[in-house]
Length: 300
Image (cartoon, rainbow, N blue to C red; front, side, top):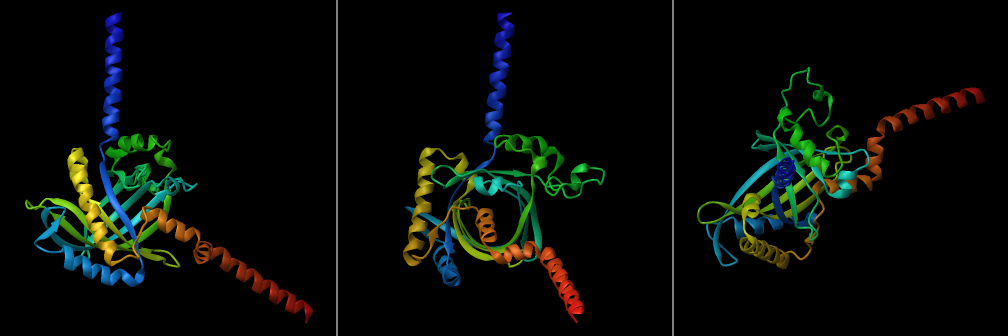
């Protein structure tokens, strides 16, 4: 009996350990996000290219190199009816990535809340399947229709930490962004960090827009690094941030996710309220005109 109990406990703890490991299966993001005044966008990008998009860059005692890439993203963000994702800084999006008008990739990303210092968060990626059989009931769901069926258990597990079931998820908003990025690489050509200027647009009326700068350490490299290497990489990111803030003091650190930032802009906009309720506004107009004509005819 004692052996049975011992084996049961061993299996239980092994299962818990596996689950904990699975919870860390995503990549750690370490990034600074800075708001850019619209008047500074062009000059800032010109400086980034001239300073970091070079064959030889000296940063934090290292000789690195930079390479430019420009891409377009079409993102659909999802949330719960109560807006809990935005409030908790959870990001769940379905992304289509284009370069020169050619679709490069589709992916689904779940980003967990930031750490206490608002710099590090976990990113978990899921495979996409947009060619499901019509008999698959998930094709009727606004989010589940995109995710590969083999990923459902993993998705449910990751969301369970926040007491959320996949069936509760609904579409929230769509964003289009142009991403201008400099990849910073080491002498072996391996990515170390990225400097990204994103110009983000709401796809719905009144088409709000903003620009932000992301200074991000390579996710894979940072996730696998030991504490010493993490400190070295963080110091490199801080050096870039200091250099840019020296020239552009109007840049403001804003660690809100793209989704939450745009969601707040929409929620605070009267024009967005009108746009979301346009059908009711139109119907009210027809009723008002009809009532006015009725009153006019009866008075005359």
